[in-house]
Image 1 (cartoon, rainbow, N blue to C red):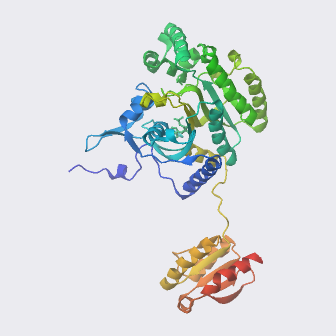
Image 2 (image 1 turned 45 degrees about the vertical axis):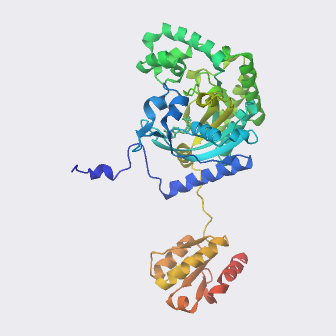
Image 3 (image 1 turned 135 degrees about the vertical axis):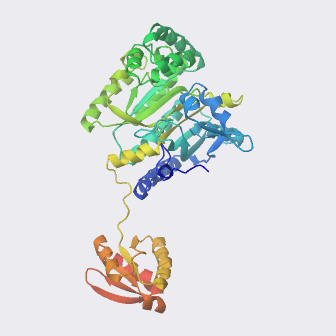
Amino acid sequence: MTKINLKDVLRTPKGTRDLLPEEVAVWQKIEERAREVAEYYGFRPIRTPHIEHTELFTASLGEASDVVEKQMYSFVTRGHDKLTLRPEGTAPIMRAYMEHGMRAWPQPVMLYYNGSFFRHENPQRGRYRELGQFGFEILGDDSPVADAMIIRMLTLVLEELGIKNFTVHINTLGDKECRGDYKKELVQYLRKKVNYLCKDCKIRLKQNPLRVLDCKDPNCAEIKAGAPQMIEYVCAACKSHFKEVLEFLDELGIPYLLDHALVRGLDYYSRTVFEIFLDEKKPEEKKKKKEEVKTENAEVTEAADAVKPQEKPALNIAIAGGGRYDYLGKMLSSKDIPATGGAFGLDRLTDAARELNINLARKKAPKLFLIQLGSHAKKKSLALAEEFRQANIPLAMSFSRDSIGSQLKIASRLGVGYVVIIGQKEAFDETAIVRNMEAGVQETIPLPRLLSYVKNKLKSK
Ligand code: AMP
């Protein structure tokens, strides 16, 4: 029998973590706000399985993508199916769109999702192997406004959470044809510098040269700063599509930077790609930056002026990302399904909300404390607590402490106005004692009248 290493077993697997009550509270608030925004703008919820056929991802994300190459949790089942824990949400949603004949629904189909995704990445700050994402997808629409709408949804959620210091990094990847022209130029340029590229980029140059632009290695950063820029090669149709997306963002006052190094690394992307970064700049600096950005936006074609990778402001971490994926439909079937989407990371947003001291988990302060003494009273109290919850009266109680003294102590520490006490006698008589904590007076009330009595007291307070 193999010996179990209890030290390991008693820890979450590498790259995963427990979310404790306080963190879950923040997480849930974020989900709640995002859901409100999504529903308000007409997005509808979808849930897809945590497992999918492995080929769904290999056929769509690209064999040479980091996700497929290094990060997927793939396995063969007892029934010999090749399955993968979903590393991302877009391909499954496109699969669902096709499987359920959503092409016959009124277009576009606007969906949102929320759940866990799995990537075997090297864990570090803000990078986990099980990660939460909340995403929006618009399928069956090729217009620039759909791209802007996705960005709007994501930034609205940030604003709703009180997060103001963010910047949308945005780029266009063009379409198949114009991207091909660009790739040729890029490869020509990179070949001249191949000896200075990092080991991974030497491979990328052969398999997926655009991904060299994604590399974080300082040597490669220098090389890519001098690389030809996509915007100079995109065709007129792609350029005008991109320009319109930017105009919508201008209209909505969403701060953005043209980022020529942004490629997003998955094969299904075309045209608009973006990532949203939280920055730590102070509001004054931020305003200045926004003005500079606006000037840049004025003429997309003058791309040489746009922000070069090494000039990126000191932004720390991507909180959301997405883009247009007009070719995904074709990759999975023969159908042309223009679509666009984006998702934010719940782990990073929860961490950011905590770092920024955004108190999302603020509960309504309890107005009432329920004291129960003895098991009979505790049983009565459970039903009572539910009555108060349904009446929307914030209530605190302690089921674990038996003495009235310790329960009263907690009640006074919480600063509640009233305490409801149910002892053995009261439980038997179907009554409760209501104590006014400030005045120190108390009254015995029959249980059927308790709710209305308490409501009146709280109203007159
Ligand atoms: P992506 O589509 O990979 O850009 O992911 C969208 C968002 O999900 C990112 O901007 C992050 O906020 C979040 N995210 C991606 N990968 C991870 C990870 N390994 N751990 C935590 N969050 C992640």
